[in-house]
Structures are given as structure tokens and as C-alpha cells.
Amino acid sequence: MCALLVSTAGTAVAEAPGVSDDTLKIGVLGSLTGPLAIFGTGNLAGATLAFEEVNEAGGINGRKIEWVSLDDESSPPKGIAAYKRLVEKENVFAVFGPASSAIGQALIPTFKAKGTPTFVSVFSTPAVTEPPIENVFRTGPMNDHQQGRAIADYVLDELGAKKVALIRQSDEYGKRGGEAVINRLSERNGSLVSDEQFNLSDSDFTAQLSRIIQENPDVLVIYGYPNPSAIISRQAKQLGLGATIMGSNSASGRKYPEIVGEAAAGAQNIVTLKVLPESEDPAAVNFRKIFEARFPDLARQGRPDLGDVLAYGGAQVFVEGLRRAGKDLTQPGFIAALETIKNFESDMILPTTFGPGDREGNEAARIIEIQSDLSRILLPVTVSAD
Image (cartoon, rainbow, N blue to C red; front, side, top):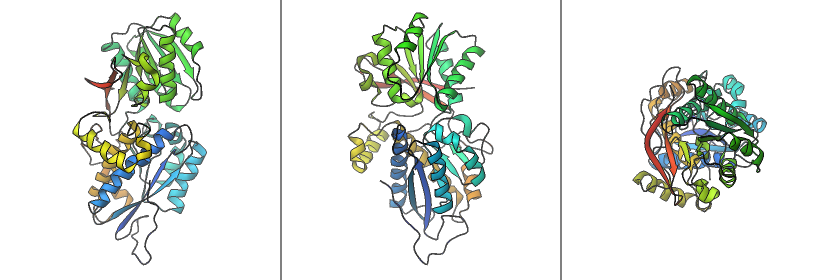
């Protein structure tokens, strides 16, 4: 699934780490095992496809990409250790990943200390971009601060909600996103009638949902990862909740309607994609064909999905930055090159823009609605956060 290579003996090595006359060594970090593996395997799969395409086309400025993949095992301490190994032992030029908010947040001191260019395409905590870190860039998902505000605006303006309930994960992901929803509703004098929390490993949400139902909300916002969000949606309908369900980006997976079942009809999710991976858009059809041929085991699991697409699109932006950095590649030069990217169009994710002091590449999203036959469509609306 990845290439684990070393530099050829005798090759002249440039001053920049991981750079030789004809190769460029990149680290890929993500959760390949544990509860966050859906994101880490997507990070690796998407990057692999993009890097292989580049190499098949002759490389970047005369260099082929080599990459080393490490598993953080869904553990922040192991994520820190793996990142340090990539930088200190593997001597990579840049790191693509990690793929989860909790691990990204834990790595902030290490990002700052090492200074290695790091490119995020899957996780969404604002902790790594607000305030910006010089060597850390993100594209793909809106950060949870922006995403939470955009969700609050959408349910007020488009869904006409008078009473909003919130149920959110108790970790970094749910904390940041949930707080953003709450703060935005407060700014706009929206009515938050319930704020409940759950743990990632929970499977019974009856207590929280019973309290929510007593408040009779118009909209229930679920800020959580795919599996708990799906169970909450199903249990909410079983308990008689009549509210429209609105989910965060993380729950915008292809398998979500199938897991929820008929109760999913009418649910909506925010999503940071230009096209859905299951759609008949030519870009999606081509990506599925390539993905399914390269990763048949993942394809049997209903992939490609959100993380795969975000990583592939992110890797395309990452590669564009390397191209712009030129033949005389340095880490400061790569950072400066990424800052020149404006409204860059990749195949399946929304346009990316960076700049000096601006490390948040995408500040817009779309809305998915699940139909009565459990298919998904993108609604003709784009949301953003001011």
C-alpha cells in the first residue's frame, strides 16, 4: 500500500533532508489501526494514488517521490513518536498527515519544534491553524471552528430552526466543533435547547436522546465520528424524535445511510467535497476505477469514501506546491511555494487557497441530503463561516 525505500548509494544528496538528485522522500502519518483507522487508511490510500500518478508521469522537477508510512495506532503519544521518527530517523523532506484531530492537536509542540513542512488533508481541529503554525498547512475539511459556525448558520437560515439541540463527542473533535455551534447560535440569538455529550466508544445514547426529545427541537446537530453518529441517528428515530438531523463533516460517509437504515432519510450533513465519491461525475467515476483497482480490499468495504477523497485531493495540492518550489528544493522554499496557491482546482475537493499567514486552504463546504431510497445528493448550496 506504500513504498518504503531508501536513497540509492552514491546518489548526491542535497542539503534539504530527504532530497537527492532524483528522489524526494515524504513521510505519511496516520491511524492505520484502532478506532480512527477509517481516516488514517484514507490518508495513506489517497496519498499513494496521487504520488503514484506523479511518478508515472515522470516525477516532480526530475525527482520521483518515495514515501514512508507509519501507523500512529490512533494514539496521540504514538503519533508524536512516529512523527519524530519520520523527521529524525527517516529524514523525510515533509510529512503528509496525521489524519485525526486528537493526534494533530497533541503534535502541535512537535510541529513547532521540528519545523518540517506538514500537510493535513483529513482532520479538522482548528488548534493547528488558529493561530497559524508556519510549517503546517491544511486543505480539504473546514476546520471545526468554521464548520460549527457554518452549521449553525445553515440550520437557522436554510432549515429555519427555532429550537436546536446538540449532541457531540467528548474529545477534541466534538469539543471544538460543538463549542463553535453553541457560540454561533448565541451570537445570532438562536435557541439551543439541549447540549449533550458522548464518548467515542459509546453505543447506547438513550439517556441523552430522551432528554433531547423532551425539548422538542426542530433540528438535532450531531458532531461526532461516523459510527456513533449513525447509531445516534437510528436510535433518535426509534425513540420518536421528529427533528431534522444535521451532521458534521466526519459523518459524511458513503456507508452512513446503510448503517442507519430507513431512519436516515431526510438527514443532512455538511461535507467538504466538490463531488461525492459514489456519483456519476466523470472525476468520481475515474477515481473509483483507479481506487478499486489499486485497493480491492478497501473497495470491498464500500470505499473510496470521504477520507480517501480528501487525502487524494490534498495530495494533489501538496504536489502542486512541490512543483512550484522548483528544482532547487528546500523546506523554506516549499513553504513559500505553498503560499502562492490561489483557488487551485483539484479533481474532487473544493478550491484551495493559501497565503502568508494563511494556512487554512478551504473555508467552504457543501450539504448532503439523504433521499428516501438512501442515496445521497449534494444540495445546490455552498456554506461558509464569516
